Image (cartoon, rainbow, N blue to C red; front, side, top):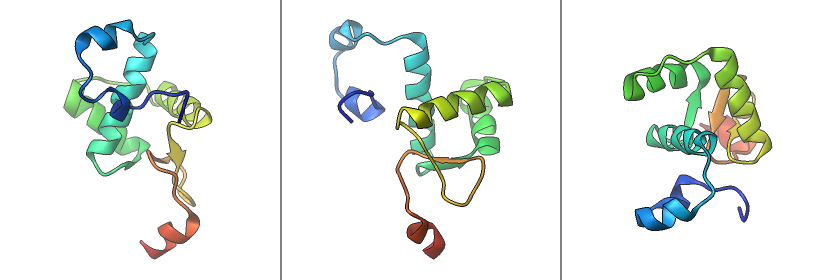
Length: 102
């Protein structure tokens, strides 16, 4: 993706370089969400993400606001909906054939 930053883009960058990036607080939060989802295999349900955010960051999130953020991230192509499953998100685009087999 030539436009949207992913956590993998920032790996091994020194703080001086990261400081030069135009990252907003919202950008950093979205990068954290992608990192968290990747840490559990790249696929997660909204319920599991709410639990993970509490366990990992001590954060109690509003379900509606988190869902809206995840949908915005999907529109940007940072997250993808899991085929045939409502409320399940993936950091990689999956085809229906791959999900039917698994």
